[in-house]
Image (cartoon, rainbow, N blue to C red; front, top):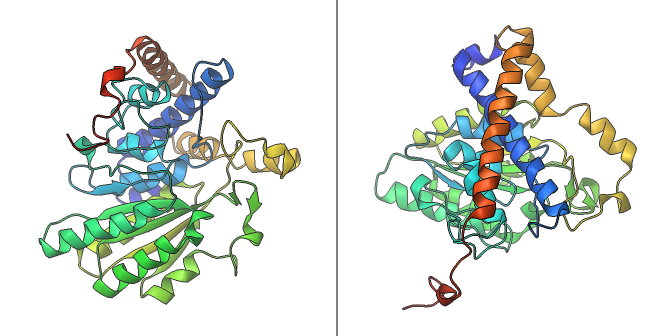
Length: 327
């Protein structure tokens, strides 16, 4: 079986599926809450789950670092955050571990799990990731850094500067670009010359690998090889995962203005959650009964997280400027 060939146990293969399902159901819940007027904004991970969970399983979650981008709910969950953490952020409550209710959803940051705090300008995290990797190399620390972005923001100068510096200094950093075909409303062919993000790696002295972002095992393979390469001191890797954003860019977007319903429905046939579920069923790792049990457990978890986050306290207005200005 493919997962065993990659060194994953049956339990890990099933755990991947559970994380993918948890990310999807949590994401779906935030859309319902948004449409009910209870939370102001959603930035979705639907269509990205396989890439994120596959990559997360390739890391050592006890020592490696993550510099995520705004869609990375699945990745931060593998690192240690919970559905409750995500919903506290969505409701902008005081217990939100990312910013204490000060930032919009998708601005992850959690010192407990070595998740670097992100910002609204896209791709700045790539430079920060390179800095963390450089510091680790200077201090002779045994960790790698994974940083991600979308293919649209991969055209920002930050990524190119980061890759050049990482390539020159052979830093243990993995640049993962989650190519979902659209930079908000702009299709790939109008934003990426040549059509390939992975091809850019050669220009910065690193391998550039393109993988099926709908297959968590293929993403695991690519990122695992990149992690091992980084640990051996052989430098950075650029990984491009090819998938499709299954929902609008955000809850403020109407994707009907730039892509047809037929295109979206065709992409849904390749939904990673369905494909990976079928893989587990085909190999006897999952049954209809055990799948139903996983769904029931996750529904209970997401329901409890929603109830807790909705009832949690908002930040005290007197602490508005805490952590913003020097005290």
